[in-house]
Length: 184
Image (tube, rainbow, N blue to C red; front, side, top):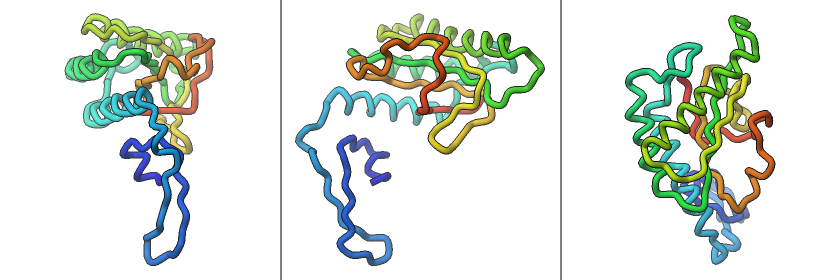
């Protein structure tokens, strides 16, 4: 079921083992005729962003909101992917990773917010028209049971009709999703 999810199957998957021989099992996909085309498109865009950010992360100068010189092509690549989306939003989240008391938490959070806002500004300059939401956190980026202890930027594509953005403000705690996180 996990492998099928990685390849974009968004329907409910029930795995029914009829026999076990090595690593084989039979399975059944229920509700296949109820595919949500907008969710399918969201997942396609999200997978493209993940692939790009895994190859080359959005990297910043240490304790700064300035991108490293080699990161601008990544911003342009992400923008090209995001130009094609409609009826969806993008949440740009910058995480500090493990916190060191070199700066106050307030200063570190401000740097993370500036990073997220800078990416939003660059996306706008590159022609992205989808709603963009910038967030900054003094926290490790968590993806289920994994946590990134280094600074990272997360781009999450959200279906506007899903209600995931309802009431979200800059002060909200991060959701437990970290699609496309990459250390910088």
